[in-house]
Length: 556
Image (cartoon, rainbow, N blue to C red):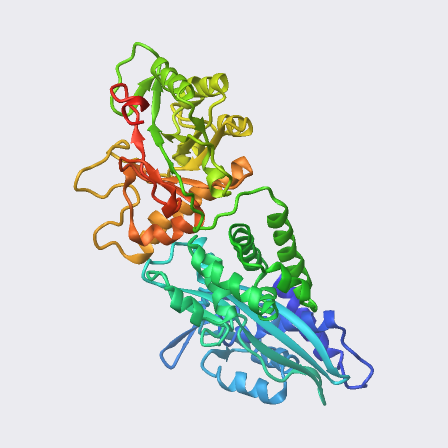
């Protein structure tokens, strides 16, 4: 039905003699309708022939022709009338002369050789805008949006070695009043995306771009990269720094993005504003927007207001204390009577530990207090519980309330997302955090050897966030960096507050993940034994493992 309506529109323009009397003046809606009709006609000569009947064939010069089934163009003369009624004389002649072997007439009926070419696989969408140049001339601008990730996702996953393609190209059509009426004097295929355009960005999905490369990209290219990039904060921070230095250029690039891309990049900038000390708000106050820039500017200003008004700790890496602090490491708490190992402790023994610390004058503190630079008590102690076992809620939490002690619990976030029965639920995490006695930290999303190793350390193997031998940059980014970012994001999403603490699984570090971890978490701990000297900062602090055989009194 749509095809018939479009053809009827094209024929009606021709038969009515639009423009011959000089009284017809097309509206923008008319121009758009004329384009829809013309695009289908043009595609008969470029993308796919007219529909045809496979059972009605003719043969000529070694070719097989099929009878055209569209009755409005049932003859060669009718086809020429449609083309001539749509395009200028010169363009019509070019199309028809180039299709001498595509369309043939046999016994007064139109036949086609059939066939079609493959469309552009990266085309996401086409947007149209019309502009009146003068009473006899309309300009129609087509914007072809390219997104290989989105356009191929519905059909199949792009191969890992395929370049990611994103951006747009434009083509301007002229719809002009000629001696024969209103006609298109130039045209392009309906999938006329130009992959060579300066505004189309292609990058190798197997390579994680370096900071130097980020800085060499234009604002537009950087925005495009951020649409589908992993969760590394480096490119987002680069764009945020540019926004603070020259907001006009960045906001212009943001406002020209495809709507869903724009939201994706703005969301990442919002997270960057919340975790950075870059003063972008001052630059935004001075910027005067125009057109589509207004909504982008208002969104960025809201992010700044939210970050400025939130009672969240700052995350600088240079906070130090002229003080040491013991950090105790626990994991699973068991009911009395159950056999324990070096990773478990009974509830009665845990209570003895808490009482001993209290009797010795120790005051428990939380990582968020350290990250905020708050003054520490004379004898501070930090209690850490790794993995996020349900026993932390059922057995530890009542003791914390009894002794008004504080502790940080680092969760393997996937366990909350899949509602694993032996681990904390999100509701439990919320309740404990809201009490002010518990802080929830990250122990990664699922990088705790949650495979056949069942969460256990493998000597000589790849553990936790370690990079696998020979692992490509892209694979490492997806497996490790995106996992760490996701753990932080999910906790913040569920609990509604910043995450300041990260416990390295098994205490294993990874140089290639260090920049991301330090950008996300102001306080991090490992498993090396010793007193934490805060004069060197809050990163990779050592801990004492408290067990049934070695209580806090064995160390302090």
